Length: 327
Image 1 (cartoon, helix red, strand yellow):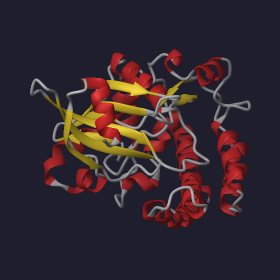
Image 2 (cartoon, one colour):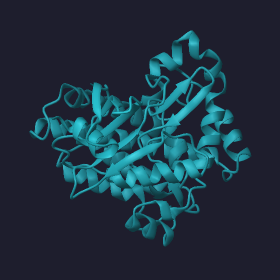
Image 3 (cartoon, one colour):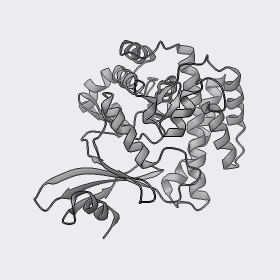
């Protein structure tokens, strides 16, 4: 009996069967499976199962059970997310089992296919409204240590600032990257004013959204959620890597003005464009460090993976992007 069948029978009863299970592409840090579960009564459930990937060294992010709690809180706040059916954390084998939401996640299709033309036209504004809902979520939905740190500190200062956290992560890789070091120093010297702390999704971008012809159907991948400056999410959405060749700065589908106007109208705080661009630059740096981390997983034997190895070439791309932004 494989792991998907074991979990299905734990959740739906010993007579449950899994006639369909296929691993989905993407997700370098965790495995994601689409599966159908059929109960003895004949009911069919279309689901997605997330599991920890092998050799997750130098990894950052919430555990799967914590991610499930965040998704439930997001649903309560009006954020479109899959319904969480069940979840487990250590000492059990960690997993999240959730409903399968139909739609497209592949950015190149979202940005180019005629089917999503109308969705693209309003996607930047819809992202602004969705982010405003995420940033209304209570800090109490975060893992206890992160919620406590965020509630007691401003986002722009102190040891909990993400700039310091990601500098520490880079140090742990043991890899010299002069461009990243330069970016860390320049960003530290030009930090925007501290902002009220809120829930930050941490990976809100094109590729982690399920999109239909009408727009966003679900927000995925909550493992990097944390307390911080909400502008971090807006800046991350604008990182060049998530434009996939498009000249449009917001996810490849829109402009800054559309995103900001919708975010503020939906209840998000006032957005200073210079501060947003600071967080965009920070996001490029963060993505570069993540690429180093994931490549190290492959090179150091944590997980033999062509996908992880291929992320190594992204490091120099982010260095080039950073040099342009810092200039």
